[in-house]
Amino acid sequence: MNAFADRIIERAKKNRSRVIVGLDPNLAQFPEYLQAQLRNEPTDDMLCETVFAFNRVIIESTQDCAVAYKPQAAFYEQYGLAGVKALQLTVSFLRERGLLTIIDAKRNDIAHTAGAYAKAWIGAKHPIFNTPNLWQSDAITINGYLGVDGIDPFIKENCDAGLFILVKTSNPSSGDLQDLPLATGESVAEKMAALTHEWGLQVIGSSGYSNIGMVVGATYPEFSANLRSIAPNALILMPGIGAQGGSLDAITAASGRGGVGAYAASSRGVMYPFDAKALNGANWGDLARVEIAAAAEELRKAIQVGVDAL
Amino acid sequence: MNAFADRIIERAKKNRSRVIVGLDPNLAQFPEYLQAQLRNEPTDDMLCETVFAFNRVIIESTQDCAVAYKPQAAFYEQYGLAGVKALQLTVSFLRERGLLTIIDAKRNDIAHTAGAYAKAWIGAKHPIFNTPNLWQSDAITINGYLGVDGIDPFIKENCDAGLFILVKTSNPSSGDLQDLPLATGESVAEKMAALTHEWGLQVIGSSGYSNIGMVVGATYPEFSANLRSIAPNALILMPGIGAQGGSLDAITAASGRGGVGAYAASSRGVMYPFDAKALNGANWGDLARVEIAAAAEELRKAIQVGVDAL
Image (cartoon, rainbow over all chains, first blue to last red; front, top):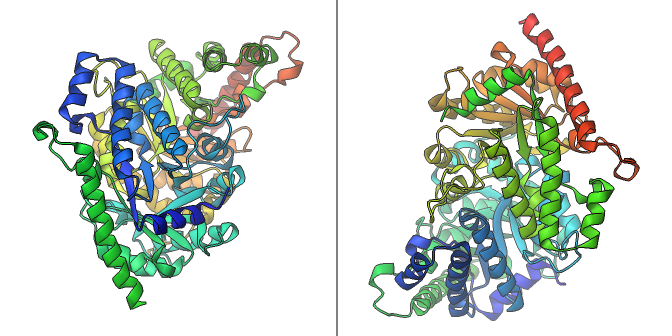
């Protein structure tokens, strides 16, 4: 298998896109006919089927303008076993189609336990049955608070997988800890970016970018350029475009060498660009496609500006 | 429901114990007859049954000297759907028995997503079916890197649930970030302890302890007393006793008001005090019980020293 960094860049160039589509199922926002189907048959099987059916339409409608898909584990776990089964169907479906999956799980633990998470989410084989791992994703988000012990087991499990380390998150209170200056002068987020850079040196793809990237919220454009310069080889996953009000400038400033280093993750904007009650038979997959195609076009323009300015 | 802090303290006093038993299934360390049963019938159903059967014996053998049980999510996720189903059976079993569960999941995310994790792990009802949530635990471990946004949704979902915030983790590289001094002079871990204290003031039980506690590794006894003094109301979950070589002194120093504020979490030591191949028919549940009873007794002695010294 090729390095994740090379695979995602290849896809970005092919699809002329920097948009990663979040897959965060929220039943209450699903089109009415899907909600009705579940009301008529309120079972775990139907819940799983409904969530997967929704994701499938989103994926099929957007695959030529998405770089990758990012299922957020929480939105599946909230529905219990039915939810995580729908996640499994979604990840397997993406894999069968040759599409890239970044599981947004923000896992973190001591080495012994991080190894088990690595098996769960990026391992190729089921650890007991040696069958293909149906949850295997191409990349995973990781919280680096525990230091390198929480990172190494993932590299050991699968050195071609992508790891995105939380550096500066998109939420309003991310500064509670991340913005604090250390005694050395750098902020906690800057230190985490420096650690990401250091950890990433061992898994650099032929593109020059590393399989170890970072998460930087598009909601803080003032930090983008600086964090990019601290970790020049890191792919940057930038959530916050859409519902959270993130800025294209943030992405432009982080776009990096060749303009292929930054990716906007949008979830609620792409998944639910419609009012579930007022669809009147409109094809909502098409609506999602229009939304992501527009986002991809906006980003192309924004990043082109950035690249030209370099 | 009562505050988690009060519930765990009541249990600690009743069982005269400060030991939390980790439930981290690792098939390769299971007694041979359980491994053989799975080799004979290598299916997801049998895997789930085997993991649950193991946990059930551990729980039944140790429930009168354990304060709570701490299943580590990673060790279930590594086995895929069968694993998380075994986790569900385990959590439900603990609840039916009236035993306390701390799900060691170290979840973390922005508010919208943290709310979904809160529903998954401490919510009382399934968000769609309104049936009892079969994954509902009494407490959960949380990574606080994202600040208060990642904490509040858990309090909102269930203000009686316990939250243990990672402050100083037990692993060798925890200092990569956590030991760094901030410009104010305090370390990152000390700052996280201060945030834990502040967040915890809104959910203080009648015991005076808060439902928001912290995780401090027993492997760093030199930090215990200081972190305890920064967060005097926090229950402290202390992993690292046993396989990781943690120290009783660390727990004594953190034991806090009334000697009920610190709890040792042991997983590998309690679960696998035997050589799976050399059991020769011995009752391994009894072996686990002997192990935890000894740990509880050691802690009683250690904490008594601590309390007397106060």
